[in-house]
Image (cartoon, rainbow, N blue to C red; front, side):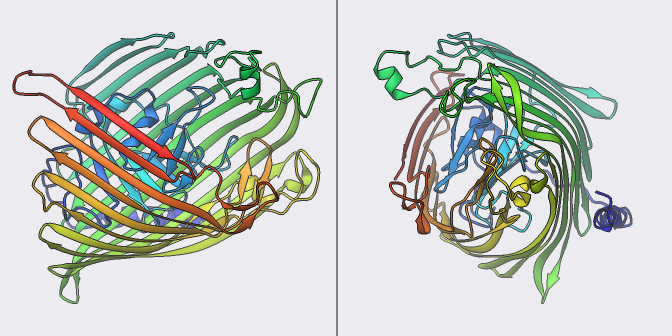
Length: 609
């Protein structure tokens, strides 16, 4: 988009870079050693629900799918449907997050959530992630952080990969139902830096009568430099996957014996996806603070064939449809912090800028039969640009009182050119989001937290400009571009019991609207404002040098503020919301009598209203 808007943003980024080059001489970065499984000690976070998962914990539990690493975030559930190549579904704090809406995920600063996606808003496909390369995962919940923007109302997870692996990896895994995975990864010195490389291939058929024939290939190449005042890395990634979809089947057909429980009605459902990226990351520690800069370019595609209703709408050709997109993403994140004093108290000021531009050429919904396109329901070319500016201040007013206050401003510009003339258009929207957290303590190794903030999520650009239903041809109301969210949290974190780290959070979150653009139907599914509240209780206990125990419990209630829909679906219940999540885990890393023995046993429980 050629406009003063973009030129101003780029000029701002250049100005920040220039300011850093003229700043005081950098000092050495202090060494930090993180031990254990969680870096969640008293005094390390701004809310009881915030924390860090270390690589030691990630290595202690096997994962079947890459996105399952997010289940290390207390209260998060990750499930799978329609094939291993499709993005997982996520659940947190009473949300059925579908494929990622309202839970923001990044990998080394690169966004995972995709707006205006062919299959669903905020689509978060993590199948290109290699779990063994993860150094740590930082997680946050609620709209209380100035640096968190779109999709982060329920929470956010920031995945950081190793710059250099602790040891080389070579593994070959085989299992039933055609499961196979091979991985080679290592780090080696190169000039004055280090080169990390990894190659992964995987295959799985699953238990299905129609074998899934899932094939995945992954590659990562990273060059990192610096261990003192300045650290940087340049990373290239490549990923491709193909699969036959394993969609749901009618219960009555299984009960009657017409098909087996692992059968398929439409065996031609399938998917094909790819992702390629290049990213640069820079951290520079200065005398009075630090400077961070991250830039990325992503090329991704998806071609997904699905059939949920078989021959209900079209008795001749069937109801199969194709969702397809080709996307380019370019963006940058930069911030500058200053350590200073405010009214004689230690204080840190931070200014940040986040810029992202998505170009879809095209994104479409099509009628299909036997895995081949028949006709176009709607095809759009979309250009979407977002700019986020934020400022925050952290001040320690007293030995037992600390505050974190912030504000962010986000502006979105959406430009849609649709095959349906009435659905083309442009929309610009702006939203401001203030935040405040108070941290009291510690007393007796216990901290207390109060957090309150406003956030938002964006809607699919096609729904924002649409006035005609692509399938029905009837008039529809456009969706708002940005939807306001508001959250509050009370919590505590304690280490009063030796070896036990516990946190308790009481939270509430309201959404101004739950309007959702349906990629399956090509139009907007309307629902009203909602309110969620709940409690989370997390415990991590180090029994001795080789035995660790975790126990987490999350309860939530989700309701629309007013009754929705027509009978028999009328009411205030939010569809798909999760009421209770409980998990426990016992990890034996190595015992005095059995050197090198590792074991992990996990239990999960979930319920819906």
